[in-house]
Length: 440
Image (cartoon, rainbow, N blue to C red; front, side, top):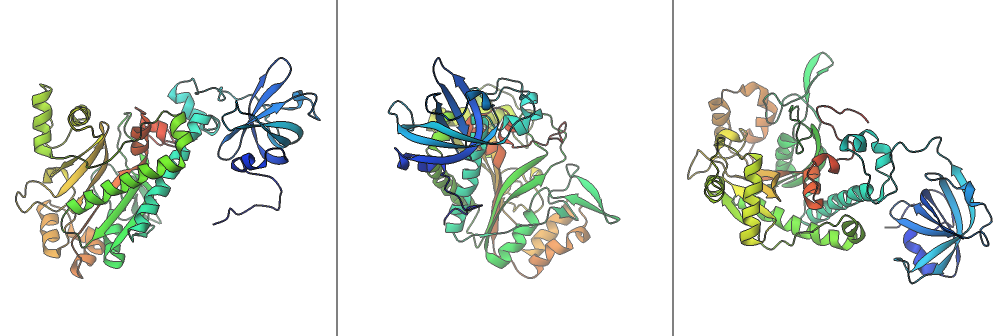
């Protein structure tokens, strides 16, 4: 598909410049940095996808260097000169400039160094500016490519992309971690998950996915929690068991990493990201994983029904040492800790046909098989003391017949943070929403 041009123009994209050595060209962007030397200056231009090094020499330029300001938006006319010492193989020697706009004030944070050397609070407070830093914006160029790769894979596996409501009448997971609001005089909530709707759509399309925001009203003030994050969800019908879901995710991740190597080499290199090589992701039952961590690391555990954050880190550390894998599937979580729609194991009803995927010490995915039989689902709802009336529209699909199905939800920001080696998930969120932050 050809790029749609906003207007008829002879301006080039940065990626096209190498094919025009010896020619005079035009291009636009923002002045990222001006480095004055003794007899000339380097002018680094930030274009939509990459930085372009320009050279200002008084003998050739038809304007004064003093006319240029960092963060000014400009249109340059320049000659493309071969330069073997440049990473791109060429330099742009500036001839003319058209200044489109200039900043009214100096940036409150220095953004044109190798990294934005400030606290995470400042980094986020000045987000519209700090995202202009080369490394900061590379994070979200990579994140965009992750989503693109997920979509390419799922489309290739005959999934249908759907868009589900974010204003709902009931939470998919219930509990207190749900935002409520008034909806024309009635109570409504922000969606915790597209769970109910993606299950419904399995009855329509068999395979569906969505990449969209979800909301959790959890009062966690940690480096791993957000109150709004992007969830990558898919759901599959006619599965044999929940192993099919894990197999699908494993292949999706393998293909995604290969695609990132093709499309984001420069950004991955800039951020020194170590991209995992996936062959077969190890699998371990929850109860066995708890015992393993306890025995290997001589650590008593107080939480019996879930992992503590430190246990996740230690399990991943052990798996990395013994198998070389950056990932591990933990399966068969206790039924008491899983939602009412999770299918209990036939062998042991105390556990579910479910899993989490841990990536470099952090849970990034939760998934499993769902209950598709109407009577089984009714029994589980009633056994938990829940009100059946609140789930009438959800149960409609069960009453009218559903295939065996299951799926997962992957946290995009957590996944990106682990890939790029960030300890704080906020570094991988464009404009984070946590218990302290509602702007910018």
